[in-house]
Length: 229
Image (cartoon, rainbow, N blue to C red):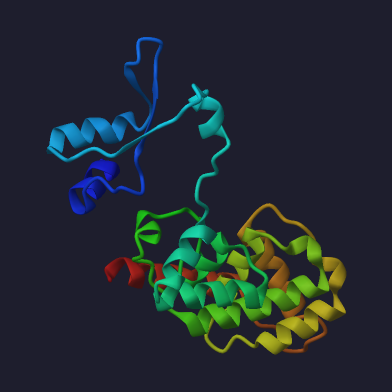
């Protein structure tokens, strides 16, 4: 369907010809591009092709080709002047973050699924809250600087949730982490990290402040607002 839609829009591009060979009877055989040929016939488009002298193994050739990554798409659209992709590339470079996490964070996705969405490939990716994402990434990077073993999706999700709490003091969290680095270990869930964040947030403090429950509540409110939009 995607190929048919593109050929409806652009026709049969000369830069993507069929690859053909001749058999022993000199008959022209399509080695690569059967789908394009079928759609061209369906749409009544002229067909462009190239005749190879070598009867090659198409499976071997296609297996050597690499599928485009999110980075490839981001670089493509950034080169065409799409500001959101330019900001995304600068963001992940600044914070040393995988593009799947960085794009989800900038989109305001609390669970950081990091899935490649169709809109990302076609140049429709949008950043919803750069300032908040930048603050989250800065705190997360500092925590990872204290302990590399917490560099994972669950920890980042916990930081997102915690920083949604009104009045949350990022500096207090980092100070607590530096005093209790042994607490920063790998955990299996976001909520486990929230418990640790609350623990180090209150370390050696006379006034204890709840973090986990307010964070989860703030997260639910944030998600409800996004769903309503």
